[in-house]
Image (cartoon, rainbow, N blue to C red):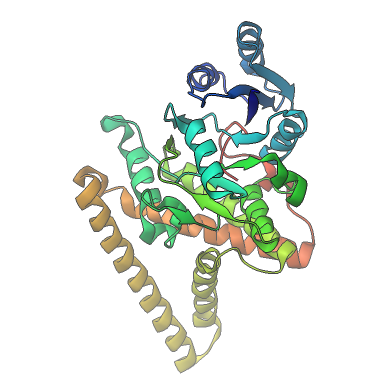
Amino acid sequence: MTRLVSVIVPCRNERDHILPFCQSVAAQSVPEGWALEVIVADGLSDDRTRDLLTEWCRHDPRFQMIDNPGRIVSSGLNRCIEQARGDFIVRLDVHTVYAPDYIAWCLATWQATGADNVGGPWRAEGGQGSEHVVQRAVAAAFQSRLVAGGARSRDLAFEGEVDTVYLGSWPRQTFERFGGFDETLVRNQDDEHNLRIHKGGGRIWQSARIRSTYVPRASVGDVFRQYRQYGYWKPFVMHKHGQAASVRHLIPGLFVAALAVLLLLSVLLPGFLGELAGGLLSLLVLLYVLAVGGISLQIARSEGQDLLPYLPAVIAAYHFGYGLGSLRGWYDVLVRGRPDPSFGRLTRGAAHTRG
């Protein structure tokens, strides 16, 4: 008897990417005894994405387009899950390139481990050529464990239990047991769902054989805005569960807060105390500059010296974007008691990015 694997895909305004993505999914190999269905939740695109998807679905009956009126990732995922008929569900992202056996290895890893969520490492890669040098720097910094705080999801060789994986794939029973994605979260809905799995006694497994390549942002400003939004939504996840998914999520916000407090004290406090605060501020800034410089040199040695001029700004965009977003998120959690709608706008025109 043939079993079904359901691929779920949230998207919005992806006219330049949706057809290559569909072609790559259609070419996926699935094990004998399994068949494929693909459900794309479109967030009411207004750039011809819907027309292109409709035409594709007409020629490949395995594909189905549904509406995602919520226009964000979490609501799109939930609408897909509601429609999915498969015993196993695989989430894919439009801006990621997949190995031809990606789905096959998701299935194999689940069958071998019995985990509640399985996935591969999060690998980023920029375009080739001098015109993509900033994007390559963004990808290289993204992949560095020193920049990412030691996240195992960036370790391309790690095999074993983790706190989160890129994208993810689940037996249907996972959603029956732990529920769907939190639609109050514009970002970090996958982290929140994985935290729920962990707290409920479930397991998440990463396999290096599940291979994909994520295409990151191509400018320092876009990285800053993206990670400011990631940082903003993380306190809502922490507040909901009364704990951080990992200590590394707290460090950028604490660092930025320390800089702000020392700057304020150096201005407001008289005499020696003000000078002491100013000295500590200068020391903290110096240590950060030296650390970023050292990390930049290390990354450039392995990924290319042409990246070196761009890496310090890219690394700072990751850290300060996340840190500033976290502080604003905590203010809205603890003081305002609700999220700011301006942080609901995605930083790349589609609802496709990681949570």
